Image 1 (cartoon, rainbow, N blue to C red):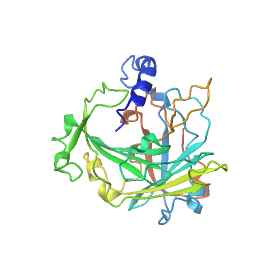
Image 2: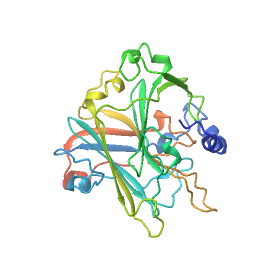
Image 3: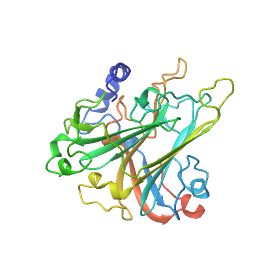
Image 4: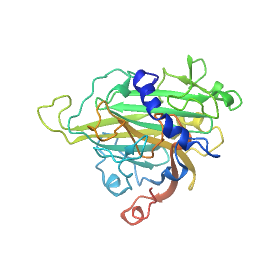
Length: 302
């Protein structure tokens, strides 16, 4: 988990930003007008999860803006973008990651991937959320989190993701006074039926040449998201349903000064060094419009 010295240092550096953002009724460090909105359109057919988002459907879909710094929202040195699609069976997420020297070291599931260069996806429900991280070796890290204040009343204590699991208390990273209180996490499980793949456009861990970067494809089955749908939301979604998802990239390197690069780059900035704030996640509206060149141009993205 990210309760390590690096994260705590970055949390301290971001303290002033967080305090300023929490003035008034809004109790979270991300300004409300900074939270991105995106429309996820329906895929016309199954997507092959091979790490290469090069099928026509990925060429036609609306991609995110270039990721910016988690703390300030300022531009960063390398390009990172994400896109979302869905069908009756899966939620699909893809990433394009520019990286001139692609590096990774961890190879075992649930190794501390955040210490590598990685990309991450969070999926939030009303009473719980899921954290997924992946590096260029296709090694992943997963945690299932539940809010303690509704853990029993929501029935999450009876869901397989938490029932009989060794649950670890968690209270955020840089934003440790969340209005909902603390969380508990299952740090020893995997998302059933999830598919993942990575493609490196270059030579991994070989700095004798210059790489273009790497790409990621993910597929999360709707049928195994019941623990994220404790409010009775439809699985798969209905047209117009809104979910909260987060998309980010963490780097073991930073742009040289005078740039104030935190090393954490996000689709929508959080304003504090902490990924675990669902209120700051992207608003993703699911549309039953099938992706095509005609309707992609009008997909709202901020």
